[in-house]
Length: 99
Image 1 (tube, rainbow, N blue to C red):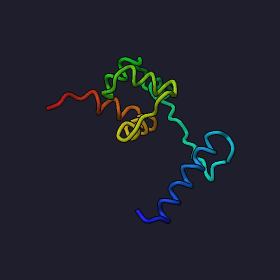
Image 2: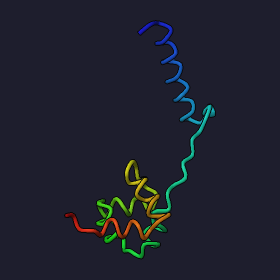
Image 3: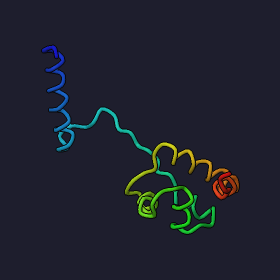
Image 4: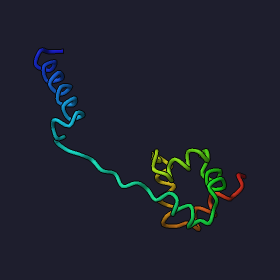
């Protein structure tokens, strides 16, 4: 690593500490709207256990999503988006038996 890059890195670490202690404002902040997992599940008319089983996650994971402690990622987000807009299609697709 070059000296200039190392100095930049040290400065950024120092600034991060200042932000964490409330001594400096962050240059930018990202806000993500949480998915309304509970409303999606209720739209499908399923219990937490049934919905978790249907989308292949543990009931604890689903509870954490619904309570905002953790958030769905990757394919789970895509599936939840489809479930929100086309609940009948999700129920039909996920209840089919494998051939």
